[in-house]
Image (cartoon, rainbow, N blue to C red; front, side, top):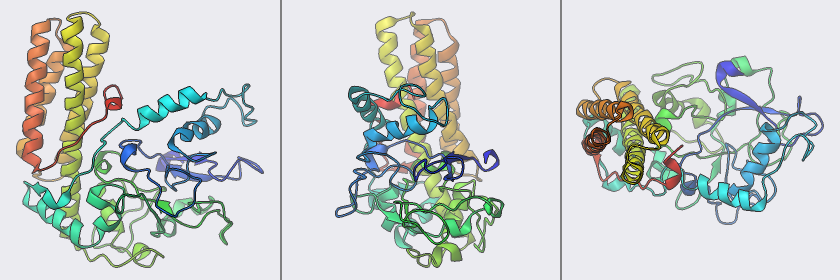
Length: 378
């Protein structure tokens, strides 16, 4: 399981035996949930919100606040008996409300308008146009998780393209608990994740997914954004119940990848700026005290800065000037984290913020993210 980045999940309940009644799933990020959990009109309720890879990841009413209840039962237990109060302690109503508020404030809280975006890199701009024209935007509206204003489920054929090494493990039926001929439970559909966050938060599918028959990036398990894009050119997607032909050639797959990398790098930079702004408020109040908290904030800002650097640098000559700005920001953040002088720290923080702003502006125009307060320390 660890070889493929998968964990055991009892998504269809623990009975009759949690060691045999399970699926293997990758671990999704939990960024920008405020934009990606809205239940489609007329769809089953519960679940009240669409959470997890199959959209039904929360127990009870199935709201985002209930997701923690399922996580405690699944992951926090001391034994497989899962006796409340003995093997784990459930969160109370107040705590669930606080967790819900926090989860809705991590990542971004707004959507882009891709029709207004212009990417600076010519190939990335071609990728943006392709994203809007070949069908990607129909499910991932504005590179988010919604079609219109709601988060839908689809059967895109991912289960039929599992890495062959998983053949001996149970199939995953996706949404719901209806028995299926292959022994799984569900209706075969899975939830649409947002793409702005994707490039540096793989895995990109609910399971280890092979890319077979694409014009490029054919691999046993998709681990890059380009490989994930390539899946949608394969027969597995095209012949799926909710699939359709997407005619991208090898160069165009890479162009869409460059586009998504640019959006992601700007997103990482926005989180870094959010953390710098928080640290500037901390240092203004506490000056040269509370240094452990100050340094942690600065280090977290630098994590996002380096994410932006790595995402852009992973392919050839993508937004090189922005990479230079981000590297400058990282150097300034290192200075801010290590200095014992308050004035030096503030100067370095402001210099890093300026470099991050310039780097983001160099990637695209009309890409502006509203970052939630939950992103400050996590």
